[in-house]
Amino acid sequence: MNKSKRKVVIAGNWKMNFTPDEATAFIGAVKPLVAGKDACDVVFCAPYVTIAAAQAAAKGSNIKIGAENVHFAEKGAYTGEVSAKMLTACGVEYVIIGHSERRQYFGETDETVNLRTKAALAAGMTVILCLGEVKDQRLAGITDEVVSMQTKLDLKDVTAEEMKRVIIAYEPVWAIGTGLTATPEQADETCGVIRKTLETMFGKEVAEATTIQYGGSMNEKNAAELLAKPNVDGGLIGGASLVPEKFQAIVDAAQ
Ligand code: 13P
Image 1 (cartoon, protein in one colour):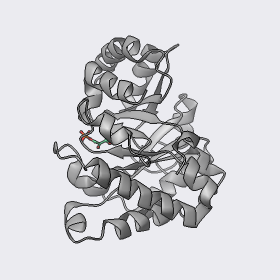
Image 2 (cartoon, rainbow, N blue to C red):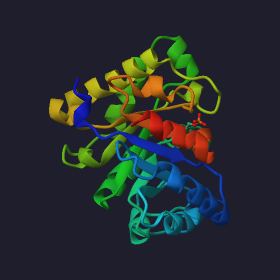
Image 3 (cartoon, protein in one colour):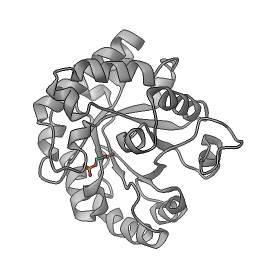
Image 4 (cartoon, rainbow, N blue to C red):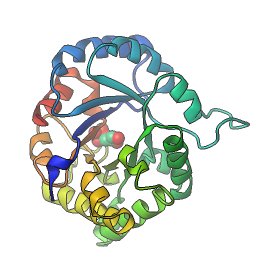
């Protein structure tokens, strides 16, 4: 596996944190800490109402700002939702889709994740597609089947060309916000299963070029070991993306 073919992406998922003022202060603090660290792309995905403030604060830096979800319709009667066209009109290039919290608490399914993914790609966005097994599935020994199935369903009818704008975040649900982390070996192995699945869907070239992040309690202490693994091409970071020094340490580990 040739890791040099892939872009390393360190992305923060702020979840439901930071008002516009708090985002401005945070980006102001983290900007100098990650400046010039160009061995990885740096992205923060923000709540919709915080995006504009984060973008303004990040202007002229190597930090990119994304959204945390997007709807699949272009417009219409979908109260509370935001379309890809609206996001791109606001200069938003990245969007997280299929986060386990969306699947768990807001009824998202592989089908809606697939629809959202296709809509975002059609609008020219880059998608950070989240998938991963729950604890019972890992204990039952069906992790490989679960992530392979999610990969196939979530990326159904996506083209090889569009895959250039897909980042996959492997996030074992049992590791999110729990302080439990997959071991580097577990993360590498499951990211490898996802890559194999991509190979069956899109061919070897696409599989080898696709960035697959690990997410789930990645922090300043465990990042270096996780990122050293051949199939782990970055991180999607929750809690540690809210603390400038912790996030910096993860970006440093990716250099
Ligand atoms: P934590 O890093 O807080 O475990 O969250 C991971 C995550 O859900 C990123 O999307």
